[in-house]
Image (tube, rainbow, N blue to C red; front, side, top):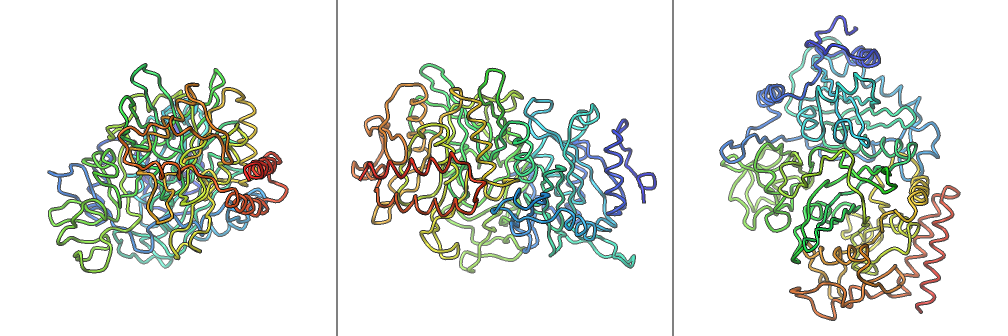
Length: 612
């Protein structure tokens, strides 16, 4: 089979030879019935939506309540990223490092040839040209995803700048990353017999593979989220982190905010890395509880940062949409996100109300008396099941958020003043502390951790490390990644952003949270910005530089003096244990661990000894 024998649906003129050859080779392997080059148009969107409604993949919601909104229900076996089936196929296992699943690239290519052979029989192959970041920007990158899933096309249209405009840049010879995806459910079997399609096709055998040397992505068997929307974690973090290492920039699992002090109009830009369940989305759409500050969203999940012409680090949001977790999103926790979902949104694995709207746990105080759950079954509040899957999602254009910055698509990016690292820590880590310097900040990011909160996660209270919130997403050896950060900091010098660590989750001995969180998280952030502006002093401590309590804005805050003091208490013995755990953690990286981080561990031990 070749492109010449397949209906190309009027393939665009002027395709580069390398694109034609690549699409042809994938078509010969997967044997689709037809090929469609996606143009990103509204007509294309409407046609695919109608097709998915007819096939049962989409349920059209109440258009009077949520115009342009649809619900999809996945197979119960295909509901989240599959980290155990995610591989870094580097030439040498040590280049993947101890925190990644490594696979021999030659062996994996043989496996992929086997599973992809004929995987698209009876289906349309969609060719999706897309841009991560504003089209043509100096920090942006291009890609092409091949998929047999119209659901992926619909989501990629929201999450990336997809279609003819991106293809024009590829035609002009700009660099692009190839990505191939199949749900692994052909409609014609090996014997040539047809079979019926199903609303959510997938395969029990799954592979999400990254080839760092050749910058390729291959994904098979899943139709869900980051397994299938290959511009997201696969490209924007795993492959982009390798590109960033080689080209001298950063691809990070970080939100981006603009914070404006209205008294003088001064703008600050902040990026922040938080592991899962640490309030990242809420911070991305922060509504400050202190007057005089305005917060605008530039990105909610991923930041690409490159040194600009003046030597400062500039950040863009490479994505065009939000792929957010629905449960827990409410008028109380994140009204900005909730309001963005009023129209043109794809919901996946949430509940369906009797009047054709959506519902999930946490959306309202009182659940509906009846609905259809995420698996299509009748649901009532006393049935003992969740109405929405805990990882159910919404896909929506970022521009629909009322908090979006007018400059969020500036191709040059925004200059970064502050980098935050955070985890969920009930003990030890203070509300906020400033790193002593860039290298200390890298040490803080490298040791980010959260305490296990349930036995199902492991030993309750044990530390779950997620360095830079990149543990599942770094495309190469994590120790080498830290080394790249150290080198870039040396290049930036005095123009590097200031690095802070925050912890909204510290608890008192009786178990109550010491800090109210949500909008009040603007208060420690305000202190960090005032530090950048040179307006407040700090107190040297074990973890870093702490605010004097009088410098933290607590006006109108319902918190006792005892709780406020407890937020910044540092027990030298507990920190000594922390240092021992860090040494054990670093040991897995052996001689790949940068000497600077070993030196930071020694400096931490010295501060602990001085505090005793």
